[in-house]
Image 1 (cartoon, rainbow, N blue to C red):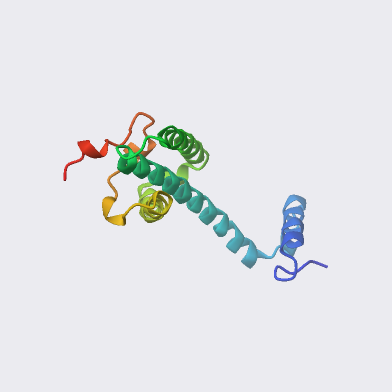
Image 2: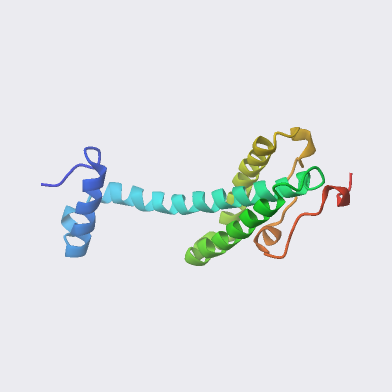
Length: 155
């Protein structure tokens, strides 16, 4: 007797795994297995977008607040370094995410979330922030790339 997907998801996953290992393909719940495998890929996409959003948020905070206060600059730089390392590892472990379509999709989502994060955490007027993403993917992933100070930005 197998457990239903809707009844007890955890037990269902364990049973499906056991069936796969035993070669009992006739007992597999193929419809739900296919959905779950697709969702696993979406989870990796969400992780990429989330890490990019945190990175963008901290780069924006550095860029916009650098001339107002230097209080959190070291912490923000550390977060940027950590996110860049995590992104690099995540992309190394999931090379399929590096295709241009996946990266563009993740970056679009990340920009909105990163901008929201920076505005919310700084409490500054949203008009101080750029309307469009000023960072290329190459800049975001480059450990040597840092945003210019606000005074260096053109009006």
